[in-house]
Image: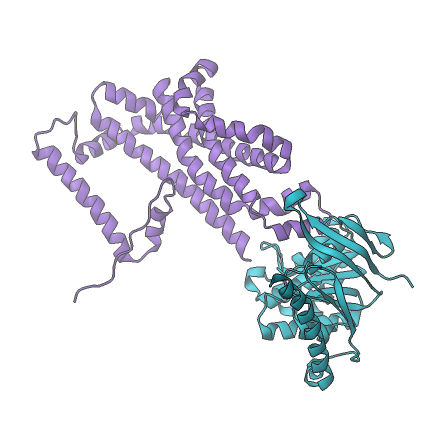
Length: 261
Length: 274
């Protein structure tokens, strides 16, 4: 079967001539339909840039990206994005923010109203649907933004360190909410993070990205059964996986440190 | 017992007179000090004018100004109406003009490059110097004064609105692009709704400039209006009448400014919370 997302030798260079900066050397990987993949790496390794290219928001310098089997050249309706910031419109209520993409795509608002209410209920925002972002906590805002990304029923969900600005407790809650949503809708998810534990908790497969050269340096399958909860975080296998990933990241950074010395 | 509270002195900077309004929301202690200072100033003025052997032509005491205000009330009111009307007209046209031009410049890069440097250059001209030319171009009627007033008052609205439209964050613009919104959609659905507080700050500056524009126009050529009456009174050395007109002008200015602030409060209340 054809993968849902496929990146072949994707390279990204910012700028030109002497000021040119290579953000991504050559990234090759694929994500199967319905798979949850985490892209893990140290800050500055280009993982967010890679995600933005898959979102169609950054041009590809070299290589090809296929989404749903067709080359990706611009933002598409079958891809939903959650950014690091909630990016909600402050003058709209939670419900109106969730329905914003539907309005902008000139689709029938009433046809999606039920879905919007369902999504908000699934992320436990039943009581907040008519509240404005300023009345919501950081975690609640990000949950609204998660609903917004799913409202148009995309095939692919791209998440760019969506919970990194939240405190640890809220972040754990968000992970559980995301797992519940994923169990229900089984979207193809590509999730960028720099938290090893988050990656192991969420993903079917973790891709480790290194810096200089910026490429995929390791790929580790996470064998835990679903549905998952925090209990798996206490198991020896979980901690072993985390240790393995940490070593991979250290190797990637070690090479860099050696180059610096 | 000595009251140790330090009275807050409201900040008054440039055109932003919001400090004056915040006084009324502050505690009584903070209200007493500025009022007492103003009263002390008026009493000193009265004493100096009456007992200092100063000709009333040079410095009439406040009571004389008050007498003029009461005695010539209908005359002053007759001249207040056209000044207020023309100010409102000019301000009313400046708002959509400034907002529309800002929208155009943010919407189209071409329009921005073509217009913005020229508009800034225009603003470097001491605009008061151009006032007589507006009379040459448009005659001595309302249109010349109103046009001149628009000419000097639309710019702060334009600049403030443009700043507001451009204050949309990059991540928000990324979201818009990911939703494949057109530039027009982004302008109307995201940029403008982000801008009201900016637009109001521009309007607060513009309303004071609008009234200046009309009065300057009345100085140059007019048969009516407070500017005309001030000039008329000065030429006859009726300083008390001129000062009475200026007092009314202050009231008109503050009232218009207050209206803008009230509108802002109303809009922002509806806008920010449910």
